[in-house]
Length: 78
Image 1 (cartoon, one colour):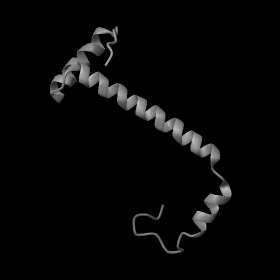
Image 2 (image 1 turned 180 degrees about the vertical axis):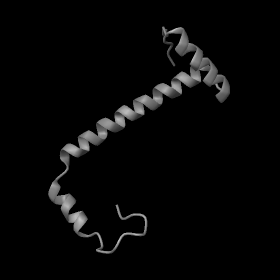
Image 3 (image 1 turned 60 degrees about the vertical axis):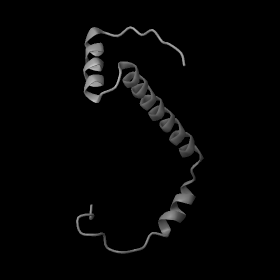
Image 4 (image 1 turned 90 degrees about the vertical axis):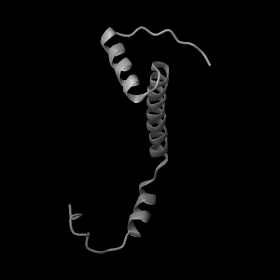
């Protein structure tokens, strides 16, 4: 594990302190979790962009052609 010195505005630090306390975790655990969530979001976005570049419209059409032709369930019309 490594240490990171981080400067934050007092207002953000206060929010972190309050939220961590309410969640019953340390500030370190809260910040670590928040950073992990952000990393996950960015990596997911990058993965989806990469997959989208490889997509073929013809493959999508084949999949959509297999969708049954029936009326939508009430409430799903739009």
